[in-house]
Image 1: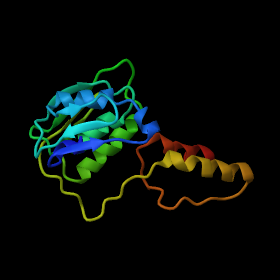
Image 2: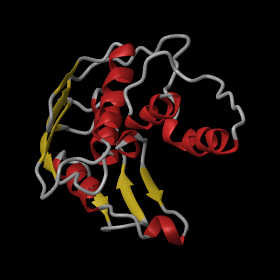
Image 3: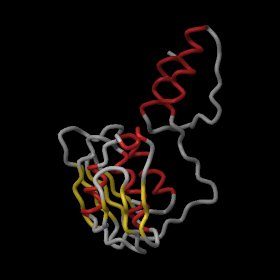
Length: 177
């Protein structure tokens, strides 16, 4: 979605593993918002421009919450903003990560409406504060916390947020109990 704001075409590619990742949801979403995308999977070419049209789009984000987050993160710079509705055979996985995206956008002054399967980002300026604390991926710390419990040792995870929105944070509370 960010590539659609570039001044000219952007080619996106990755290693063989990245080329296996599902892309249909995000590609369909971008096309539904008026963005010219060539390809169905990596490599993709996104035709950039100053303000993609934006508007309303229905996507199947069953494969990844990143489809929703990506569209929301760039949506304020699309001419009409972005309204994303998830419609798929399964719920959006990792929905708390979309909640993290919404919180970060609001911290940057972006107007966001959110629900269980529909989100809207109003068009407008993005005013990032001088310091923006981005919540770390807490699920990645689980193995270190579990190792401390299994060995009877201790571990300190620097920068653990005082408040968190993601399910990975539950591991700390479970292990503390």
